[in-house]
Amino acid sequence: MKEGFFRPREYHRPNNLREATWLLSSFGRKARLIAGGTDLLVDKPPEVECLVDVASLDLNYIRRDGDGITIGAATTLDVIERSQMFSAGPYVVLSEAASNMATPTVRNMATIGGNICNASPAADLPLALMVLDSTVRIYGLGGSRVLPIGAFFEDVNKTALDEDELLVEVHIPPSPASTGASFLKLRRHQTAIDLAVVNVAAKLTCSDNFCEDARIALGAVAKRPIYAEKAKRLLTGKALDGKLIQDAAEVASQEAKPIDDIRGSAQYRGRMIAVLVKRALKLSVTRCET
Ligand SMILES: Cc1cc2nc3c(=O)[nH]c(=O)nc-3n(C[C@H](O)[C@H](O)[C@H](O)COP(=O)(O)OP(=O)(O)OC[C@H]3O[C@@H](n4cnc5c(N)ncnc54)[C@H](O)[C@@H]3O)c2cc1C
Image (tube, rainbow, N blue to C red):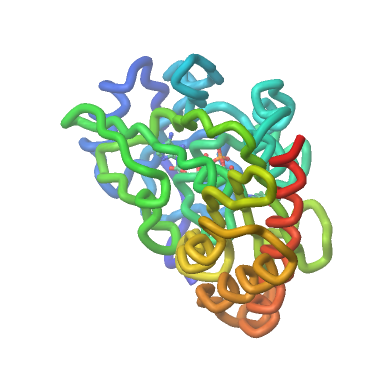
């Protein structure tokens, strides 16, 4: 239980990244960025005295060039869900994750930057971005730096951001031909506002059923979203058949370290990870072939 009340006394709308980082560094722990507010205004951290809005920072964009796709941190999830950029190839995994997230009203306000930076172990978009080998660009007083998204998450609600830093954009590199990906999520009551009991994203690059490369990302089974590295190694360089996919799903389940909580027991989560990974791999194989 958090002590005290959430009563920010200051609201700032900086016009550029420098101004934003200056505000963040001046107020330290007492400042918090706000994007859609769908996490922050539910969480209501009592230590926060100053809100720094990302709305005027021009971070609402999706751009495609020869080097892949770049998404500004303030892009809302409904825009990602409906974007043509994520309607084909392995990129559909991102629109699937977005459309599985909350209700249209929430998606209309919630941003990709907020979903990543809140660092919930059960968040949906990070898994899709992880299997797509995305990187995040961070900006702070010391300038800009880039991290693989898997390295951005450190613990429950804890990221690699320093106090003066913010997330600027996410970059998704091009995937090889014949790559398919998918996202699946199990909710407790299967209602739109339920967070995941477990969620999974998978990506396979395969030709003639031979797996050249694989990624599997798991949510709600550790303190942060994780890659199932052993399952990836089991699949890579082998002919894909039902047995191999089943074995990989079981291995992924063993890599998960779930806990008991209100949404499910650790044992149930472990079993459901195996089920979802198996289904996500099968779906990804069919998508490699199209
Ligand atoms: C009813 C309901 C249902 C939900 N269902 C789901 C769900 O199914 N799946 C799911 O994943 N989430 C869900 N959420 C959580 C939430 O909607 C998402 O995490 C959302 O994407 C957060 O984005 P936001 O823009 O609202 O973030 P905000 O609330 O504005 O910010 C969240 C955190 O990120 C920080 N932040 C925001 N932008 C940046 C930035 N550019 N750089 C650095 N830090 C930043 C903020 O300071 C804050 O700490 C749900 C929320 C609600 C209220």
